[in-house]
Length: 62
Image (cartoon, rainbow, N blue to C red; front, side, top):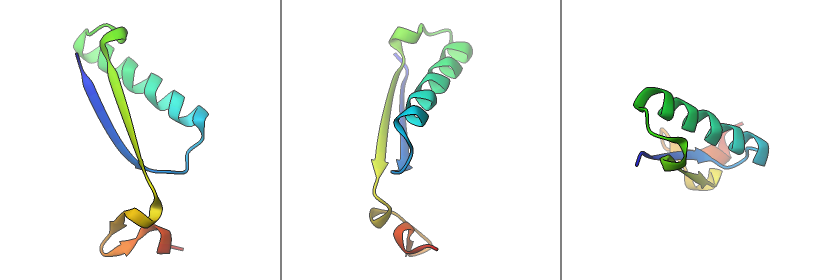
């Protein structure tokens, strides 16, 4: 059972998230042979004020 965790900053539409899950599932099935119904994708959306790069919160970027 492939289990994929994806961390990303919140802000994408429901349609974008659905397509991301579909694309990731397709890539996993293509490259591992696992059936799609066994592929699990977990999306973890972080708020921009809870994630930083180089000490700068994403919410503070312009």
